[in-house]
Length: 153
Image 1: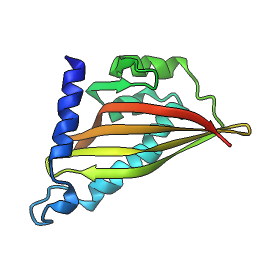
Image 2: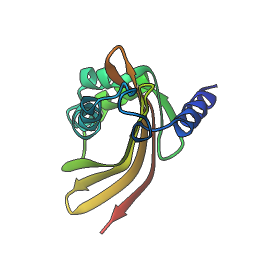
Image 3: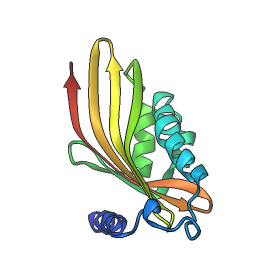
Image 4: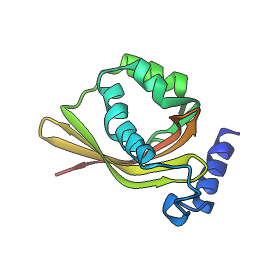
């Protein structure tokens, strides 16, 4: 059932017009939304993991959040909050490079890109896609998928 929900959400995203394809006069999406989503993914989300901040992560994730990790394991919001409580960030630095940010007129967004992790002299990258919905004026992540973890020179 959970995989069905995620598949339907992704198909809905792909079949809708993006913000740039919709008339600005009819769009409910503002430049503030675009800035808020960038801040969420590039600043707040990494900060929550780096500082083991479960309150911040709780505010980012929707109650219906689900994640698929690089090994194909599924987790939900409660499991993700428990995970960051138990795992301090082992890296020296991290940044997320957004490669795709689509915001749909219905208040759904897709944020995709590459995470760059640095520890000692080792750099690791991974690919990530996130589905985020606007609920009661707040952007909430409902789905994440991570893949392609690899060390680079």
